[in-house]
Image 1 (tube, one colour):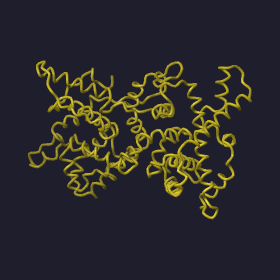
Image 2: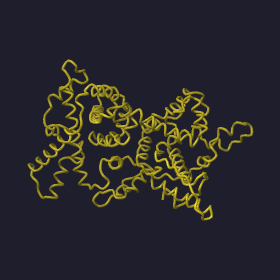
Image 3: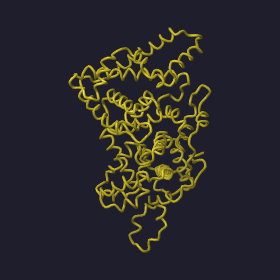
Image 4: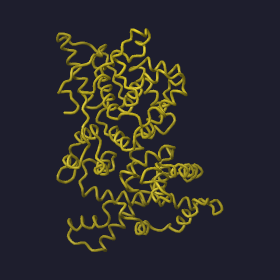
Length: 476
């Protein structure tokens, strides 16, 4: 990958047009030095535990988000950290509360899964069953039994706490507990889960759409991350689990159903959470926040915001891409849909996914507002203590992931300016960028650009580099 810093200092006396391909003047300084942006170490177990109180509540939420943003998370901490980061457990939940929630999640997921399987069995004629679905329909017809039996036959270790933890918790609180008491509590949870599943909307009159989603899922799942140890090899048992999760989500989210690419998003959660149940809930909670990206109008809207950002930051590059008939930046579709999964090595893509999900640095964040406050204060002093009127327009839809996109384009602008049409742009993006990007460099530049934008919105017609200020430092 060509480093823009190599050509910022080149003499242009031999080329009268060279000035035209340089980045806009106000942004040069942000590419010249990364020394004032500090990336941090990965969040380790000791640091993570330090954010918890004695009962297990994650009380240092902002510090937790900042630590994730600064360095990502160590692999042995990810499962616990992602449970908070993606909403599986509330930050203020205690360890005991999370054990109960874990059991509830298990029963609810099994109830949802049992409901669609039973419905599929009832609506699928025997002569309309494919080879792949024959066994499933047979088992579904056979197992319209209670969730208690489903629980007895399933792998309870998929639920982190299991029956033993629940028994120990109740024994601690209420003294010795009989197996009969434990059985009654399990049956109560089972009944509540069945009621929950029955109340979830399910369009039984639209079975054709349901079965169409299953057919697409059956094509996509066998292609999901087959080089990863979690999914490689013939008859891998984790592939049916991915299928179960995707179908369950599609059935009970009819406004979204299933769209290609969801399998790639889900596989991340499955690799980290190592549980069908917890993967389903993390995936579902995450999709409920970004589902519009999987709808045509939603992604076109996000790409429209990205084009507005690029027009503001690098109008010359935007105009060139427009001349190549790719001004809609459609080649960034995969970046945004899969959160850069195919642009970085797997471990780095996981890190970037959690960094973006930390929501520590956004235009509307406390850190960004501090940057604007400092810019206003310095502008006030430069004006001799006289209040100046600013026309502030803060685009809160300029999210950090869009700054990452813009940074990648900006950092590779020289090569992109050498492309002559949409085909060469796509070829460079796919072959020239994938797995050739420096993640730490991109993150530093993206942070600089976001903070520079915040300063600009605070000080009208001023885009100068402000001196580094410890009060403003985002790594303090």
